[in-house]
Each structure stands twice: as C-alpha cells, then as structure tokens.
Amino acid sequence: MKSKFDRDLLDNLEPYSSEVSVSDGIITRLHANELPWKNEAVVWALHDNLLSMPLNRYPEVSNSDKRKKIAEYIGFEKENVLVGNGSDEIIDTIGKAFISSLDKVLIPSPTFSLYSSIARVYSGIPIILPLNNDYTLPVEKIISEAKSAKMTVICSPNNPTGVSYPDEEIEAILDTGILVILDEAYAEFSGHSGLSLLNHYDNLIVMKTFSKAFGLAGFRTGYCVASETLIESMSKVILPYNLNLISMKVVEMAIQHEDFMKDAVKKIIENRKYLFGAMQEIKWISPIQSSANFILFEAENPKLIYEELLKKGIMIRYFEGKNYLRVSVGTYEECVKFISNLREILNVC
Ligand code: PMP
Image 1 (tube, rainbow, N blue to C red):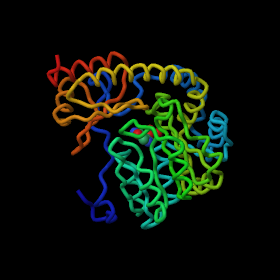
Image 2 (spheres, rainbow, N blue to C red):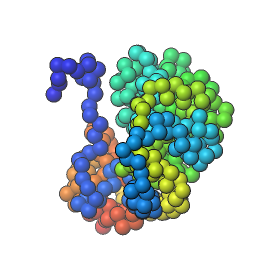
Image 3 (tube, rainbow, N blue to C red):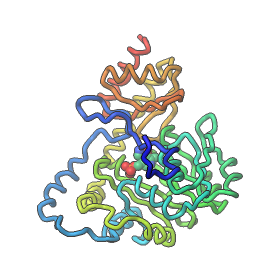
Image 4 (cartoon, rainbow, N blue to C red):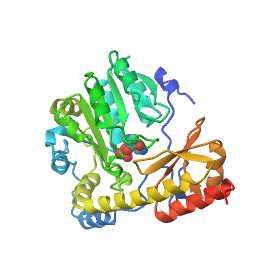
C-alpha cells in the first residue's frame, strides 16, 4: 500500500521484518541470532535501581556518562564513542551524517539488509558486491570500486555467513581512504576485534552492540567507536535523548557484569562446535564454518526445510530465493532438538 504523501524512494523499500513475531515457549527461536539466556544479573541490578531512577526527568542529552563508561571498557576516550538505540540507530545516524544524494555505498553481500535500505533512505546508491564463492570478502573488487564510492560497510563476522575477515583485508580497504564502517555485532563470538585499527585510521567507524553476546537485545543499546571528528559529525544529527534512562543503566550494569557475557560466549562456542559437527554429518546440507553465534547452511530445498521445522515448533531464518538457511546457536538442548528434527525431515537415520 502506498500513501499519497510518500517520498518516491519508498517504492523501493520494505518495512524491516524479522520474520513472524513469536515468543519464547511457543516456539524455539533460532532465527534472530539472539542469546538464549537472559542476563539475570543485569535484570536484578536494574530492579534494585528502578525505584530511585528520576524517570520524570530527561536523561543526560549527550549520554556523556555512559559514553565514558563504554570508552573505559574498550580503552578509548569518551570523545571516540557514540551510543545508539541499538546499533540499528548507529547505522541510521551514519547514513544521516555521511550519505549525500547519489553517494555510492559499497556493500559486500549477502550481508545485513539494513545497510542498503539506509543507503537508499538517504538517497545514496547501494552498490552490491557479491562475496567470493567461499563467502570471503571480494577485496580487490572493493578496492577498485572505492575510487568512485563514499563508503563501504563490512560486517565481520558477517551476518548471515558467520565468516570473519582478517584485519589485513580491512586495512587494504582502509588504505584507499574510503569511509569504512566495520560492523562487529557478533565479534565477541569470534574472539577478535578490529578496534585497534582505530589507532591507525581515521576513516574507520567500528560498530558494537549489547544485543548479542551481552544478551540484551530487548534493551536496544549499541554504540560505535571512531575518531573524534567523525563522532562529532554524527553527534550533530543523532536524535537528542536517544537512549532512555533504563537502557543507559543497563549499559552500565552489563559492563559491570561482564562475566555473564564471557560465560555465555564460552557456552555458545561449545554449542556451535556441536551444531557444526552434527550438521556436517547430514549429507543433504553443507554448513559454513562460523565464528558467530549462528551457522549458515546450504541446502537444495531450503523452503521445505524451513516450513517443516516451523511445523515442529522451530524457527530458523529463511531467505527468499536463496539456496541457504541460517540457524542461531541456542542452548545445547535447542541445538539437539534442531538436529534431530532436521534429520527426521531429511530422512536421515
Ligand atoms: N548489525 C548486524 C550485523 C545485525 O545482525 C544486527 C541485528 N540483527 C544489528 C547490527 C542491529 O543490532 P542492534 O540494533 O540490536 O544493536
């Protein structure tokens, strides 16, 4: 449906959808790359703080205190950090600050769909550069296209492939001088971060989130780290009071209770190992080695697998028209449930 007030560019956009809305308990949620465990320590700390929070007052406009806490946590200055209502808001803010009409945005794909929609929203041109056949980064192609482009968005580990890209490849792209957005939403599960590249490059923005490894997707908090100049530019366009008081408190608690994240990552890595091994043994599918909390697998009949799993109460991620599916690494029990149902669907004894 189209309203008579729509900007023309809306013709090419769809509302963001993370599949059917389903809640815990009714279905096994293995479609949204969430952590299967709730960060109880944060919830209790929040509970204790809630009564004393001045909810009748606006929060601090520049989130200065929280930026400082995050900056200390990652070893940077607060002037290098900007917080957002999820890293989704950071992606939007990057678009608002840096994409002018007809600017080209290089997007190695498949990847997170929001990058190209945001490029379009700000009247930029998303240039889709297919990943290599083994899902590695088409570095040479990016470098050659960089001459005429404004920025590139690189997700590492990449959603949906789970493949991480080496720092040397990111550096080679940074050397072109183009603005590089490095989305590290899943980096904790890979044991590596490109944050140290910021010590050498001022054309880099690294994005992070509390939604994945910290298990706080419901609180919507993310941030980015970059040179003081880039952060200042973004600060000019980000909405004031973008983080509510509760989310701001949650950031503080999440950092204080970092052990929860470390334990969760350890467990997810163990479960990922089990899941990958079990998937490798199923001859009708080909899983791709992942350094994130999900696994992409190629299959001849993805739609059928997706629909049959759903009938059995398991939701994974289906991509219209693609020859692959993505499954999140859940609890060990959820992984076992997924494997046994998948084997049944594919008639594997
Ligand atoms: N980047 C990537 C690669 C993602 O997969 C997601 C969420 N699916 C996000 C960013 C956004 O995360 P959030 O807004 O919850 O921080």
